[in-house]
Structure formats: structure tokens, C-alpha cells
Image (cartoon, rainbow, N blue to C red; front, side):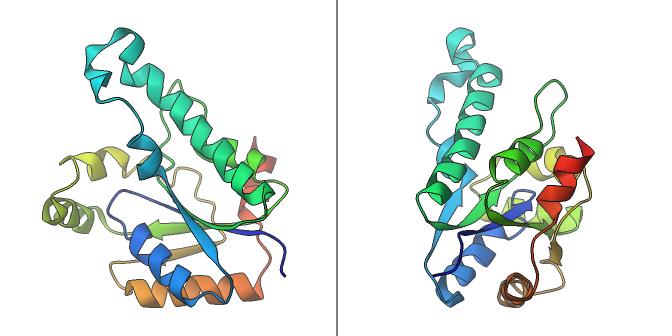
Length: 186
């Protein structure tokens, strides 16, 4: 068995992370769990618009940090992971990506940037019908803020299958370095 590997897909909502993750699960030679930020966000009470104890600004950062710690816990238990994340940088909050860089230090963790032009993201967001309109534009300049990745893929010019092939080829032929670079910058 190979050492625990984490394939960390980071991109704006509707950029194609989930499609790539599902293909990777089907094609990788070992079993990988697909761990999604969306599942953790769905755990939040729908009362976050009440404010006070239920204020989203107070609840979400704790849930987000819990998500990051759960990634490390799943890997510690010996699971290979495909992480589907949107590491949005927000002023006044700690950096999601930097927190992950430190928590995932013991593991063979690859940071994969999943890119797509804003116009296409907005088109996909509208077509999906399950996203808040405007999410892509709010996230666009905040997700790849550090400009560091082991590999970048563009889902507007490359199919999800081809992106998954690129990721798999990279993981089987290179050692990860992006999270190490991120730790060195902080």
C-alpha cells in the first residue's frame, strides 16, 4: 500500500471540482474518499440569518476549521482523499489554505488549482440552479490568492476526464511541493 495521498482540488464554486473528483474516484488504482466542503456547509443550521448565536460569520469559520481538521483525521486513519474545497480568503479570518498547509504537513498532499474564466463560471452557476447567483464573482479573486499549486487545470478548455487524467499523471510522477511552499511563505 502506498503512503496516504491527498488530492486537494481548490477552485471557485462551479469550476468543475466535483466532476474531476468523481472521475478520479472511478479511475485511481486505490480507493479514495471524496470529501466535500459542501457537505460541511450543509451541516450549518438554516437559522444563520437570525444573528446572535446563529450568525453565519460566527458559525461558518468554526465549521470550516472543523472541516480542515476532519481531513487530517481521515488521512491519519489511513484514508486516501480527494478534497473538494473552495479556499476563499476573507479579511479578518485566518487563511483556510494556510491552515490546511499546516494540518496536512504529515501527508503526501497535492494542491491542484481548478480554474475557469469568470464568464463561464457565471454561466454554469446560472445553469445549475442549486447555487446562489453571484457566488462565483464573490469568490473569483479570493480562491487562488497565493498563486501556488502543484498543478493547475482549466475546465473551460479541458474536459473533466482530461483534467482527471492530468491530475492522476502528475500524482503518479511527481512529489508534492505546493503546501510546503505555502508553509514557507507564512
